[in-house]
Image 1 (cartoon, rainbow, N blue to C red):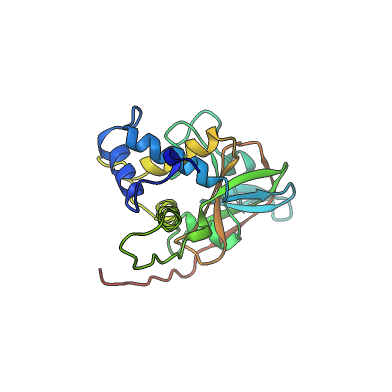
Image 2: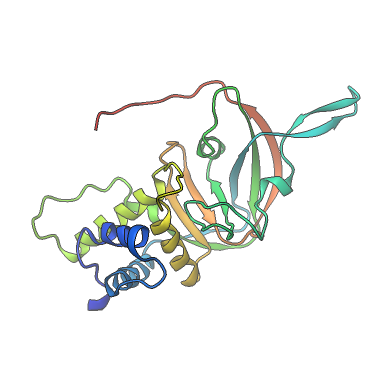
Length: 244
């Protein structure tokens, strides 16, 4: 790793995140450009292959309608595939994608996919089982999700790298409330765009809403096909609170 590709310090991600959220996003400072070069370099050690045939899950609030020929009436059923995948030319802003540039958000487990849409008690959730149709390579940000930094006053470059990647995964995992006057997603959107420019197919990160499995966001809308779908009713939601 060259000197220019080393993270400047353990707070490099926080500085980068503040800059792109509050000061400048498209024409960044030399410090932020250096940070992104270091991410691109160290990311090569954190790649994960998703082979063709792998199953991932995607959920959407609500349901569609299907014709029940036996009963002679329409009944509730899962959303069709056209509703379970985003449109190619439009998208609301998300953790990975900026407004207007869609991506496919998946979870590695069915329960994780349902948790990610934040359903409420009594709501109906459509869940789709998707099969990956080609080999993919994603940037796995989850490897150091639970990493605890050492107490060293002068951490080594390797220790700083671990701290930074733990911060990156926490940023991808953290649930945020969308608002009109802040840019909570700016840092993760820029990082996702970097991974895309580097030639990777998506991002994997830990879910903070489910302990089962991980989340995967894929850039190519045609890299997975819906194989089956079902609907579920939300019966119980558990909350856990911690003083801050």
